[in-house]
Image (cartoon, rainbow, N blue to C red; front, side, top):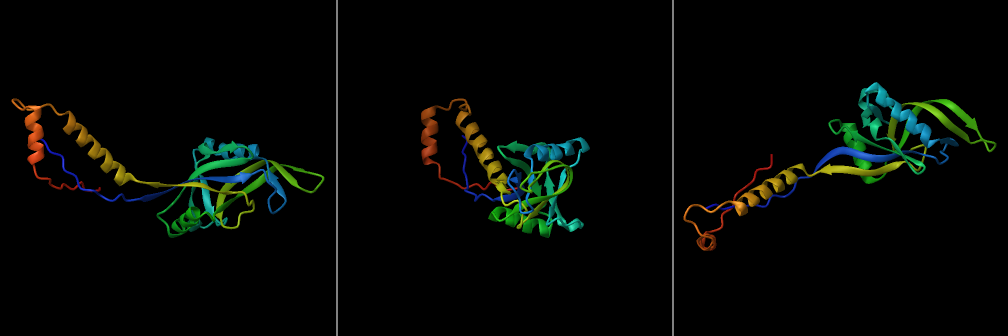
Length: 205
């Protein structure tokens, strides 16, 4: 006779630092520049040939503690007139945790360090950047382009998911287990009704 007894465990939410964001748009920025979205995608996608991730800095800082994560160049894509990319904040550093808090609060924007390689100036004085070499993306609360923003942040439910899957497997095995020799369904049902309920803990690892 098999019995499955359970104890409810509250899910533990774990931040991963993973995010998706708009890091550039075709809007005129505060310096009266327009970065062509296709040019930005080309510049960031070029990082895939280096086998390196794009540094994510805090406020264009160059000190080691100012590098708070990375942008994955393989995630960079154009969506309408915006450039969207995925990245990760390093939550093992104090500054990274501060930046992650801003990302989740909806107050974070993005800028980037670059060298322009192709510029066209319009009659109205707006500079259109059609080619550039990007060497870092920066997280900041005062972005040059007001349209940049965090789209989503990811929190894992790893412990809860593992527990749920474990319980599901146990329940399936219990419900599909064959009857023991000489055991009938009626006898099994009667035994279940008369068996006291016990509690079993599933430790969260």
